[in-house]
Length: 405
Image (cartoon, rainbow, N blue to C red; front, side, top):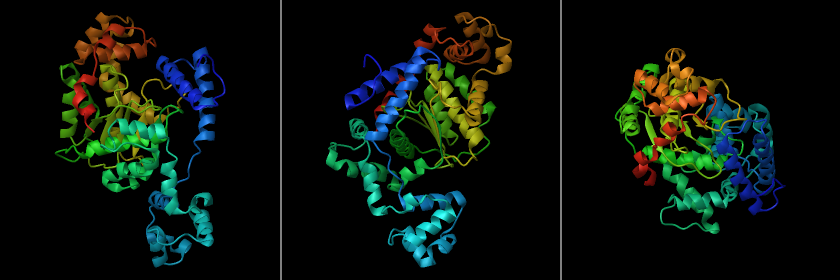
């Protein structure tokens, strides 16, 4: 795509996505020419997707169950809206369809939109899966998510159902992953790709046995600082993964999908053993450690919040609203890696040199790449210390885990 134009064809669309990824990697300022290009491309892509990939509505029964969970309602609490205990049971099990009176009562009483409730539940699930982008399903197939089965458009629904049912929750996992998520991601991110990626993280995590349950409160700043000191070991990332497992936290690695720009996720679907997923989108040691600390901060600070997932794009977040929850996680991660009290009195604050980076790293007992990454951020110049930051990779540590499905 030589110039930005209205997206009319799939070829235009794919070219626009490629250009967006290139622009996002440069992390342009919002008022720069490249930042304005990115903003315009975002609008054009969203307009095209709204026309070509219309959004489907959630299943009505799942919507009712979701509202029940939100409001801590029991089936008996639905009797005023549906009519009797047996009728409530029939509706929730899918044996009986909602009547117009029920739709009105549930819409007014529970605040569920009528356009959601009037759908036929038995058809909606297949319609939802059929609307999924074929390119996403093809990418799942290339990753081996369907085993030896080859993707064809006519078997898309059965493949997706099989993929989600392998979690042990059938299609309920889709609803679980849609429930109260917290995003810090690009507006162009494909939310369905996030659901697939998170499901794969969930499936991988189920194969890993943690010896104990996570004890809320154990993951404090001291714990994070001690963990950061493992970075100086040549197998630091693997040591961190094993240490977290011994403390009831499971760390899983899985590459990000096309149309996602994700660095990490925290899943609190099972609070006995919280799960952290990392993409290693940037193959750098400093990014690994900051992202890991950010996700651990979510567990430490937001374990009791009514949020089951935290999706985080750590780098390239210009234009994304960073709220208090993300600020808190950022600050705790930063304090765990390079305490502010040490930073304020270090030459690294004044001089972005390799010698200053190494001196502060030695004082803190952490890897020099971590300090270099923080220095680049604090000095607001991501060309500083490139040799240090780009010399230490992380994907090779997890090569076996990345190849396992």
